[in-house]
Length: 446
Ligand code: GAP
Image (cartoon, rainbow, N blue to C red; front, top):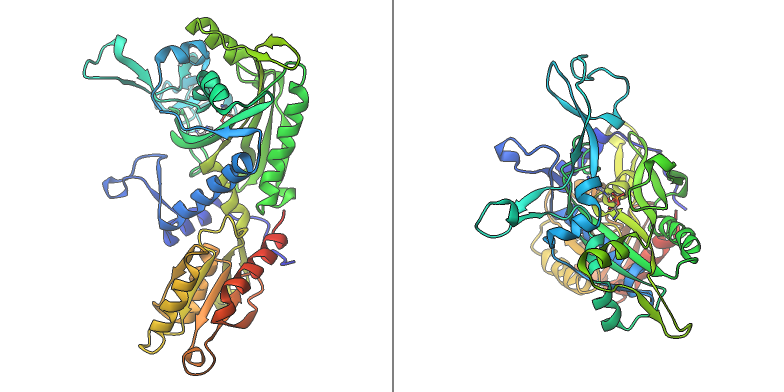
């Protein structure tokens, strides 16, 4: 087991590493940037895709009781009336009477403006949904909303999905997609933004079994993070106080992670009862109850929902993986990602850009890339290239040297965490890499 040498790092370090290595860039940077909006670069997009794929695999593909769907962002505006978002999806906003900066009242410490010390006016409720217009006429009849959660598309498709998938209750519907919230105070890098991706699953169950399923999905969520490498001591479950509960929830718990600024919400698991299905049945006039043919009874299912942000999860994986070793010029920054989360699993590095090495290195690259997400890099010195791969968390580097070409057709595999090197014939390389990644998977169970 590799010892990690550091328990945490600052947000500034993560933001600067993200920019330097192509994880995340400020949106619209050449125009001065757009506040609290971020773009994923070539390395970051692989990280976020791996987080989403890991979730989809564990949540949908490896289970018989969960199916997926992918709905549009724009939906009928009545959905947001029925769901309560038009009336209740608000945060209390206060404005400083001196500098006119606006803040979320419930997140303020003290009652004076943190910017200028001025006093606030009366709080008002600010609705977080973005509005736009459907079609060419910009009047109130054409108003639609950018969805603030992916969940509602699942509720309104409950019957379509249940009948076509022929799933029996209990079963779940999962979705990954963009959501939008006009947050009053976004911040902390990709933690709270106005455009983000969610990974949500609505689990439909019989009333009376909901508390048990709530417990089950809380444990499942903790396991998801630890089995993909986040250390368990950096995670905890926290039940919501009654005054924190969202308007639809009977009980909610957050999976919290120690972000660089302290414990904060990573995911929320809520017991939404039959609130949403009943509300949509009433507003749409469509019966959304379920007939249980074994028990010969009809009921409106209760729903338990694990709801996670893909961006927030990617940030947690990044923060947890960050490590530093050594000092001065021997200092090494290394991201100790679980192999399924790491942006690349393998890098192929010829010792130099020598004409005799490059064709063999490219052949090795071709052997590996159908099986692993592989990067090829022949720029700069080999030492710098190892450092670069450590900084993006590539578990294994494969080096092609003159011995490979002249003598043994074998290559060196260097392990990111132990820095140990083993020599392996190219013929056995795929198996050797698979075995080493498996060992690293076991090693990085949180
Ligand atoms: N359907 C329930 C729901 O949306 P939520 O607690 O408001 O519940 C679920 O959101 C998750 O979505 C959060 O735990 C967080 O990971 C992510 N999330 C919410 N708002 C976000 C924002 N402004 N920026 C980034 N992620 C956000």
